[in-house]
Image 1: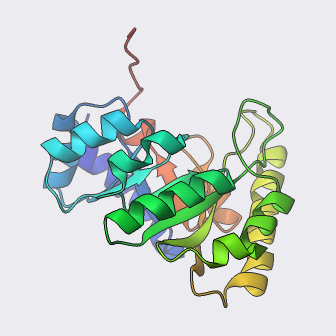
Image 2: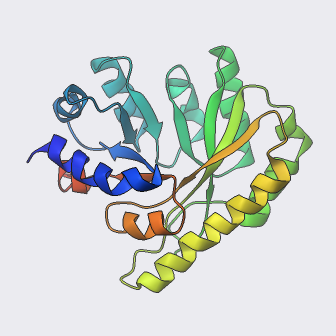
Length: 227
C-alpha cells in the first residue's frame, strides 16, 4: 500500500473546494503515521485519548492532532497540552472541562460542536437546539480558553445516498444559521464543517464540508485488537 499515493489521490479531489483532509490514523501503528509524515503530511485524527497520547509522545511534535472520537470529561487533561482540534464536543459539561484544562496549559483549544444528524441512536451528538443553547449561555461566553470554530456530524450508516446527502445538508444549513447568530462572540470563529468519511466524503464535499475524516481509504482497513 502506498500511503503517499492514497493521500495525494484524495487531496486531488479536495483541492478545488479547499476542503481539508484529516488522515484518520486510529488503530494504526506509529510507523504508518511516520510514513505519511515523511511525505509531508501533518494532520492526523485519533479517536481514543490513550492512543493519541502515546503516538504524540512517539512522533514528531509538529503534527496537528485531531481528537475525532467521543471524549470523556475525565480524559481531557491528557490531551489538553497538545491537541489541535477537538471534533466531538457533545455536552456543555465537556466544553467547560476543555476550557478548564486549556487554562492550566495557558492555551486556547479549538473545538467543534458535534451534532446528532443521523437516524441512529448509537451516535453521539447535540440536538440543534442544545447547540444553540450552549452558544447563547452566559457560562459559555465567559469561557476564555476555548474557541468554537465549527460543527461536526456523522451521517447514518446506510446505502441511501439521498438520506446521507440530506443529513449533511441539514448540518451545513445549521452551521450557516449559527454563524450569522454567534460569530460576533469573542470565543466563536465558525469556519469548519467537519463531515464526511471514507465512504461518503464526496457527498459531504458537495454539501459544503470544509473538513473530511478519511482513514481506510488512506491506511487500509482497520484492525482492532481483542483487548
